Image (cartoon, rainbow, N blue to C red; front, side, top):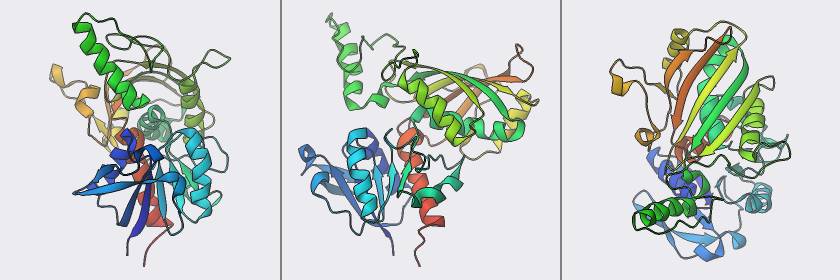
Length: 340
């Protein structure tokens, strides 16, 4: 007997990807229900070789649903995730709303799967921010081996992290520039085509953006509260795939070769370290549709006693969102909601 699954935000980028991954990984679901706002009712979304009719979230009764994979806006999640949990479902929430709630586990399965046990407190499990997910996956084996003191990370994040409207904006601005049209920003504060924007999310009182703050506090919650994190987050004119240049300072010695060996033996990371010049590093374009976090350009930082630099890329719609949520669901049913 399989599970009854509801996908909230099924018409969005991440919702589409969740449905695709559930099918790809043969998740044991007897029934999958697509939910979205009233504007999307009657539309169809693909689930394997099936088309699912979209139902109205505001009118849906969650009774009998085992797992909710939720990716609407934060305000929607604040209202409907507790309703689903109260009806008996376990909610795996991809929004920012629940991440720092002390009674809600924030989980990356390769890093802290044991935290899923705390889902019983509120019936909700939070999916971390996309940029945090790929970074902590890469950091986990290094931290276990040498204890991380400090991380300095600069991110180069694709427009898909802002949703379909942002992808359309990049496409239309790029096309318009070649037609001698003046780009008009809408989703972003400034032109994104042929440009970079050093602002993701709103600015906070201390000058950080909220995206940068998320990377700091989420890394501490997931990996280790003692780790110091300095993040600078930049939006770049790439459709899919986030990139990060990461500098790490350790308590104990860890050479580049030792780090490479750790990554080669760590599930969820692919190390790209070939001798051919064109294969020494990997770009976000090359990892679209891939599940792993990819690490390359690994080198020692000679400015500190124990330091490393490396380049890290991942598909933000998959590992940075939908795949991580499905992997949480897989651990959940394997350890805490078994059938039979």
